[in-house]
Length: 148
Image 1 (tube, rainbow, N blue to C red):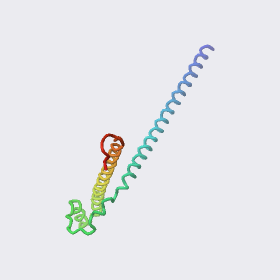
Image 2: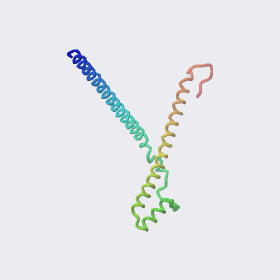
Image 3: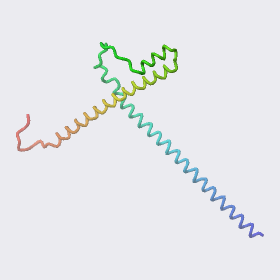
Image 4: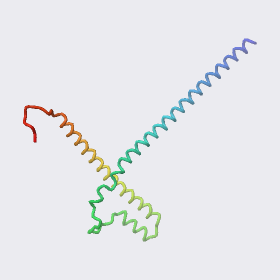
């Protein structure tokens, strides 16, 4: 009887230790996963913020080339016409939704211009750097006459 009790007692203690080990491992794994996810989200957020800050300097760069007074009357787009119709019908909610769509479209156009400007500046810098590298590669001495 006593031996049986001892065996059950040892099995019970082993089960407790194995269960506590697995619980501890599970907890550690979940914590590591949470920390990695938080770090990844923070790194993604910081990288997107740096990209956005890099692009914001190009907003309104070419505005000086646009004439302040436009001589031609610009035709309204389909969304703008539907906004006018919604306002005439006193459907304010629909007009707000359409206005948000127009604003989103205009912002998208501005962002596209900014990205094009950024790409142009980047290409120009690359071209200048390649020219500088080619100038450095040329030797200062040689058998040819000096370039003046």
